[in-house]
Length: 205
Image 1 (cartoon, rainbow, N blue to C red):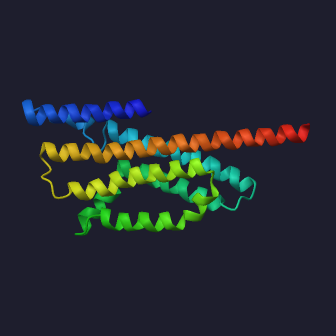
Image 2 (tube, rainbow, N blue to C red):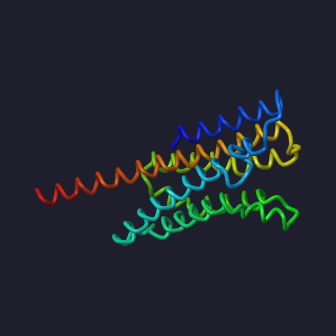
Image 3 (spheres, one colour):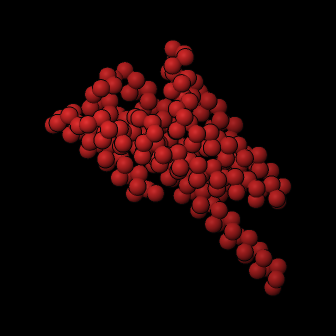
């Protein structure tokens, strides 16, 4: 999945440079790989990655619920959050928000991210340290792209190479953040299963 994302980012960069520096390309070709457009290959890739993360998070939530784990609701909230993000990638709900209010969606989005991060701090501290670090790092990368770079790109002229290269950073950070989170989540799940097998082996002995 990582290399597919890199390929989509490279296609966006190459086509943008050719279009603005050498020769105007057909809109249909650019739209297919344009990271700033909807209903194309990068959009479906990002939506699928977020959806896969939501499925694995829900599986974790079900496992935690079965053992009446203290943090089972946090896993469910994370699963729901990633599911909503996967829908937003296709539906563009944050862009709709921008069309009805004057303020950039990234500002309230950034405040919401800070609040959620604060509320989830005890949950993160309950995790194994390396998993917690990877979760935080992936979140910082994702939010940094989705909100930080979004704000930096807002003043730029949309029909320009500078804007499209800024979009490359924005979407690239989002993709890398999700892939890193998936890696951390699968690493956590495999570790949990190994621990369960060890407990079962000890009991049977």
